[in-house]
Image (cartoon, rainbow, N blue to C red):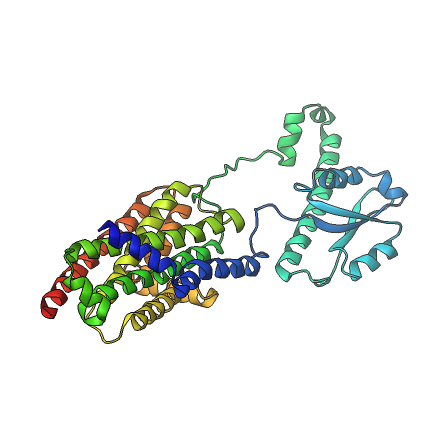
Length: 397
């Protein structure tokens, strides 16, 4: 058995097609995803809003300028406003029209701030980000005007109330009764599903190793299979060695893809890397069982044709796992809603959901259920492979 294991491992790692599809292809596709989704990922912190301020004598003597300084004078990662100074309103207006800012702020002689906003997105700003920036500037200005009026009213009605900071904070609504609750284990990011779907496709592509290895054990598939059948080594021992060698190849390929995602692409797996390794093991086990079933099936064609079947299965299953873009992801979700068993019979979707369950759920039960489904399906397919192998051996004799 060990001899078959090492021979399978050595021969599969020397195959150019195996090196391309199992080891290089997932890394290349992950790199493509990395460039495609680089502008979509976010850390949850908004970028500073570009705004121009008219720094005339009215601005320098106003309390509103202190508010703007406070919102822009913190660290670059936390600043809410990205302030650019202009000497006059005309200069500020020209900068806004040129797309350098979302709007400009000014203060009149009475100390009241005013805001002028750009009418449309310029300078390459996305429309959604532009509207959000407009809302932020409007909220900053309107809240200051409202609070200033409220403080003046309190001062006229009860000047002594200004001496109590807590009462003033309650009047201005500065306190909050909102509690932040995290509903998911990881920060929701729709792009991670594509990387998880990529792992599903990579696992199925690695099934080529088992398909080729088991095909070569068949006595009717060539001289090598006939010699192995006539050797003194038991058929089950050779089959077990071939399956273990194929599983090792699959684990190496998936491990390389996972390491690239974590270290180079910095994809979030919910901080559960150890459990991800368990997911890789169950995924490669399922892929090995699928490949072995294709290799042992009584079909016409040799090892190359069966490897082509594995590739076709991988591409088709990955379509319904949502790998090929937003449209495919919607198709996958629609199919799951219309026919829930589809997420269990599609191996690519099942493998994808293993990692998504680790990322999304606080509980480990969804991951454990999907991992158990992978193992159960693998055991069932291995039983079929063993039965087919014994039958083909007896028929040859």
